[in-house]
Image (cartoon, rainbow, N blue to C red):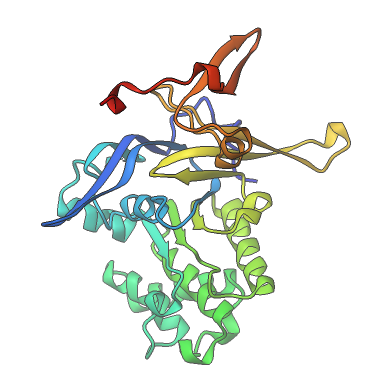
Length: 307
């Protein structure tokens, strides 16, 4: 099985984002998509990023894919600094170091080419001979269980089969990183399970690092770790451990994320349950910190609200 975050904690992270910002500007509007995000991903890890629409998860994935550039902060993938990379650097990065699977199958495949030819395209663009490209394409199609369907065009394949071909295409040049943006969003639950099992098999057999963006929080039992995003920052982490010694098949724990500035996002449902608004009392009590709502007797006008 691929290295888990705990097993890889001593090694430098393969993906390292620190105080990452992304600001989109137009003549009349400024949108801050990422607000000082911190994230570390170990080499060989299979992890997921979840969050509501507008949380910044797709923006983060596009930056990691080299499709977008950050406004400020730090973002390294392996030895490559994506903040200072030139346009030519990013082209080379996208061709050789990262594979990408989109939710919409039409964005992954060329409709008039067969499955085999789709996998061959990135190989031929990299200068492989036709024989080498064909051999690699057939190897990958066999790995995703579609060798016998290699001559079919995308419109002759099911949605799940199209995504399998898309995964083969993304791995054509043997990149160390695979990114997937809602790869099962247009699939039924049974087919989605098959795709996630395929990701896990590829992760274990090839060691490829896999980052999946999804709305589906049930993904926690399919990956090593789930990072939830809210308002452009990481808010919580769900980590899966083996726990056979305790009579359980596995142990799933959820943690709030503390960034390097000491900021911590409490789950929204906890804030709502306690009625915590703009301020809260935080106290160190023994070996833990207590967070309590402000009492009515403690409430007073905030300085910026004084008339």
